[in-house]
Amino acid sequence: MGFAFHPPTFSIGTFLLALSIFLVLPELSAGITRHYKFDIVLQNVTRLCRTRSTVTVNGQYPGPKIVVREGDRVVVKVVNHMQNNITIHWHGIRQLQSQWADGPAYVTQCPIQTGRSYVYNFTITGQRGTLWWHAHHSWLRATVYGPLIILPKRGVPYPFPKPYKEVPILFGDDNDHILFIRFVGLAYTREWFNEDPEAVIAQSMQTGAGPNVSEAHTINGLPGPLYNCSAKDTFKLKVKPGKTYLLRLINAALNDDLFFSIANHSMTVVETDASYVKPFVTDTILIGPGETTTVLLRTKPAFPNATFFMAARPYNTGLGTIDNTTVAGLLEYTSTSPTSMKMLPLLKPTLPAINDTATAANFSTKLRSLATLQFPANVPQTVDRRFYFTIGLGTRPCPKNQTCQGPNGTKFAATVNNVSFVFPSMALLQAHYLGQSNGVYTTDFPNNPPFPINYTGTPPNNTFVTNGTKVAVLPFNTNVELVMQDTSILGAESHPLHLHGYNFYIVGQGFGNYDPVNDPAKFNLVDPVERNTAGVPSGGWIAVRFRADNPGVWLMHCHFDVHLSWGLVMAWVVNDGPLRGQKLPPPPSDLPKC
Image 1 (cartoon, one colour):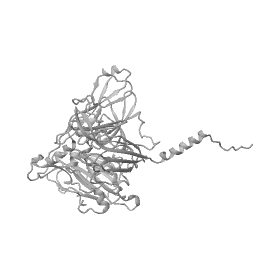
Image 2 (cartoon, helix red, strand yellow; image 1 turned 30 degrees about the horizontal axis):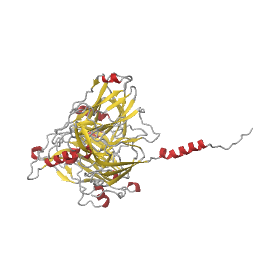
Image 3 (cartoon, one colour; image 1 turned 90 degrees about the vertical axis):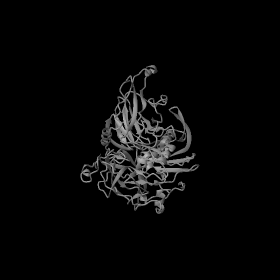
Image 4 (tube, one colour; image 1 turned 180 degrees about the vertical axis):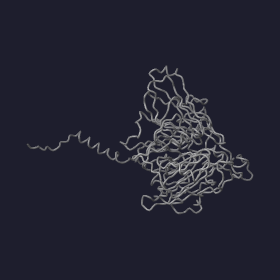
């Protein structure tokens, strides 16, 4: 018995279906290019019954949300329509082969001047999760910031249950401290200043005193019902019973670590700084400025007959004045009876005390990388270069014929290894690329503190700092181990340190002075958490490792903007590697000039 062969026949419908699949295949296998335009403009914004002309992107406060996929190319044209110079930093993006797009002023570029534009062009390589973008010149990020959400490649699932919905939540300030949180969407927390944040830091730098604090914190730009004249400006997250919501938390605050909690609800942490972590359940989140934390919120199985506060307030152990108020939004369950919603009791969470270092440390030490075959923890197992950096405050002498309002008539300063960073007038990356570092920066940043002392004990009488534009130079592919030590000079406090261009692994942390003999034996080299920003514990230390595989000039600084302004900054120069893809590319033609 034989088999008859019949050639296939194609209908128009079959042809169109095949064509549509063919056209979709490129997006399935590779990323696409996503274009955005950011117009930097002034916009009147009213909070706390005060209206202020505010620097914004496209007139929005907070700024627009960018949503991309891993592998996508992102092209953002920034046009500056205001008098202030500005730059935009893509916080946490590694900028592989796009170093000129990183954004910090006078480091990878000169600022974008009035009437000028610059195109930031970069590709998302090997990253997925919650990041954010913000201005990186003076204190403009008080209002110029927004979420940058990287979804997995199409067809690649999350390594946790798929959420019903994603919501952004932004933490910020209602005067200048702005923070952002993202809920299966996004939420930011931040501060609000009734006065211009640029004027706040300018006055502080002139007098040498600490800056004025914000009038309020905000969630998604809204101060909420706990502040006067603010009940109508409250963020409300409406949820359904029995659903899982993905909350992407972003701390965009200028100067505050925050505790965050939702009344009568727990959260499951699944990601920090766009790196997956081993899930764990917690009632309270600690999130520092610059950090992101993604959590799953499982709502109650039935309508709970209550409304719940989502609240955040600072964690602080320093001596300076801070905005110690509490910001709140509302978690509301949807009901078929709007009348009953108005009669529901409002439940509040119990937040830790403002100086609860034990709770802060307990949260931080729970974070562990997922460390699976699909999402490995590529921790350097050997070390080529070791560094020991002290992180803290100090003072500068008061100039002659001036009265200063810092400690004992001096000016506040901040340092790494007692060097207070001075920003140059030419971009460091441009000087490095052109081989013209002479007069711009020096390569003698100290590997260790210049004057060994009991860093967490009684501070020395002499608190004066040295000033300079110093960098540390690393050969390509160097395995680096860096210990960052808090000091008690002018008060021990947590410092959120952010490294541009890299992620690092926190292999160890502790209180007191780091012990180079005994502490390394306790390092976690298996599944340490991977971050781009991490808090140096108040009165303690952290040890991190990273591989210097991204050539360029990369800023590392405290993400308290007041400390950045005072000089708690340094930079790494990573030299080119031998291969083509390991070299710094030439600058784009529209790179802003100084």
